[in-house]
Amino acid sequence: MLGVNNIDVGYNKSRVIHDMSFKVNPEEILVIMGRNGMGKTTLLKSLIGILPSTSGSIKLGDQEIAGMDSYQRVRSGIGFVPQGRMIFPSLTVTENILSGARGNVAQSTWDEIYALFPVLHEMRKRKGGNLSGGQQQQLAIARALVANPKILILDEPTEGIQPSIIKDIGRALKEIRNMRKIAIIVTEQVVSFMMDVCDRVLVMERGRFIHEAYRDSLNSDKIKALLAV
Ligand SMILES: Nc1ncnc2c1ncn2[C@@H]1O[C@H](COP(=O)(O)OP(=O)(O)O)[C@@H](O)[C@H]1O
Ligand SMILES: [Mg+2]
Image (cartoon, rainbow, N blue to C red; front, side, top):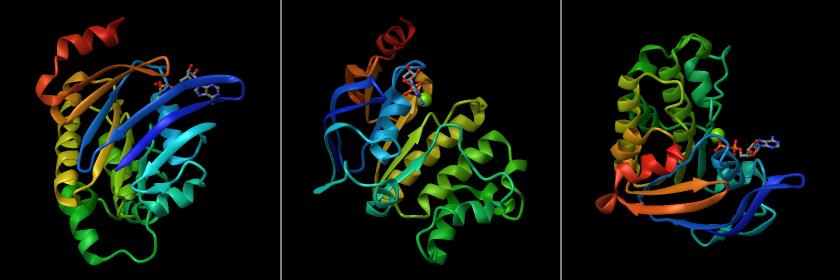
């Protein structure tokens, strides 16, 4: 589905992501764990093209996307939910969702989004800035889904969100995968959330992967220990 090979990413002269390679399989939920400052956001920004990689290859299906601008990558099927959610506070919920759309939105897409996140339907005429953190996160996910991505990428979606809503977000990600048959990449620091949603986990440290585990052979204590170092 997505194949990343030997990419380097950084800021000016400082390299953050070092010769990184990984794959995401169709309909897989891949969780990338790592402490603050380890390079999770930098990696995701290079996948979506906000911060281009300086070498290597990024393939979405058979298509090389590493040289494309962000808008072209979105058009090719990458959906992105940024860290901090970045919703438009003065636009309504509906307007925020539409800001992610490519052309007209089918009624079936609205129905699907509101079935996933009923609270967004209740609040559809409210301003985004008046929603709670958890509701804004749901809105940011809805805004990415409305473009019908082939792969959905989320950067620390549970950050600053209360535990009961974290459960809801986990449930929503699994529902999205099952309904849309798409792959999902999500960065995280919350181990319980990772245990809830992942098919596979990669642990990142200083721009490199130091551990990989599939769901059925996953040891959460080991991952906690790696994150505690
Ligand atoms: N805009 C930037 N300019 C320079 N360095 C940055 C910038 N953003 C992040 N960094 C550095 O890149 C490293 C990785 O940061 P980041 O990708 O945000 O990590 P994470 O998302 O895992 O917390 C850190 O050392 C951070 O200081
Ligand atoms: Mg980050």
